[in-house]
Length: 454
Image 1: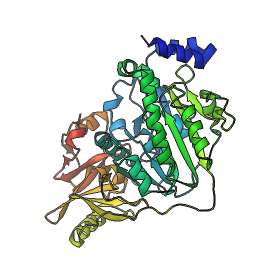
Image 2 (image 1 turned 180 degrees about the horizontal axis):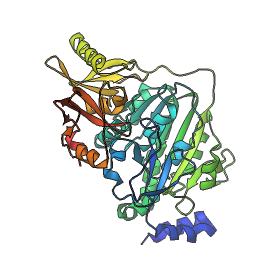
Image 3 (image 1 turned 180 degrees about the vertical axis):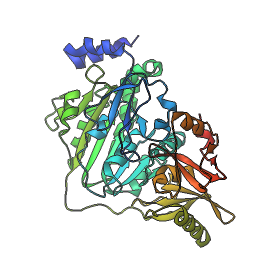
Image 4 (image 1 turned 90 degrees about the vertical axis):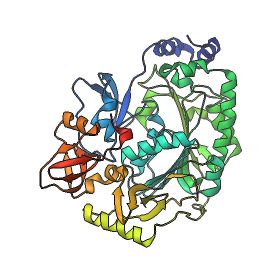
């Protein structure tokens, strides 16, 4: 079932734990999710038949032990109330220390967006997040997930790592590099990872990771953190990467993980017996030790030399014309109880509200901020992201009565409402914005995007 050379390598790594590890690979992968506290602050009531257990090292993280087959089409998922993420993939961000208020964070290899969602929750509304994904197709998936999660203080770019490094030298308080890897940790999730396995693939990934680490680290401000992670077990892609990096970058050092529950659920990094670096401070996640798939993480810190943050390239975004600004501002005043702070920028025909402190580059921006909508013939056509991010601020809201009505909305059907309800309406599921619509004459016309409907 698994390549013989892979098994021999894992036996050398795990020793007495090898048999338990191999046995775990014969079991199905465990489905897990996080509650998205950016949009939902209440108690989660899951559909009947779904049973879960908590993931101890990740607040709001749960593994599904029974049921859950239909959760992907549930209003909980569509509203961004929950986000499906492997329990092992939750570990790296959970290992980060508390960041300062107003922290600026870079997720360098961000798609599909699980770690970006965790980071946005970690830094809160006062922080700023840049999520980058070099492959445009994956960047679009990233935007869709950020939109659903209702993240307001982030932008998404699709740029080469070298360009990010040149634009934001020593700028970020934390840089996360979830590096492309050989994917050994995903063997339970698909045959492709097994079929594509080879030592050559490991070494090729390691060369790419070294370049990403070298360039991405230049974006870390003095006193800031660098989080490196992979979903592989290969030492060439993990401990050797960290050790080589630290030996070549003496201004960084490896820190201990202070999440005691995470330490209990993982194994220490392999000791390479290299006197300069103690890689045992890194952490390894295995399916026989915890609920998730394979993962490696290492948290490094850049020494504070008193220089502070670097100066990034100036913002290159384009503001809308005065008429468009007036139209957008009038719409927000008429429809929201409170207008969020920020500045308006134009990308194509869409006007967005930027509520973060990341200077935007002149190209490669897939999501500058929260898309407010398009100005067409002097009126604003609101974007789905406006409802998702700021639905709780809409003057007119409609709370869906039950799951049946929620499914009706997600199918794209009209909803019956009170005849007194009129204008643009945020459609809510247990207080969490699912989407929007326009009410008139006792009917809410459905504005849920066709590409999201079930």
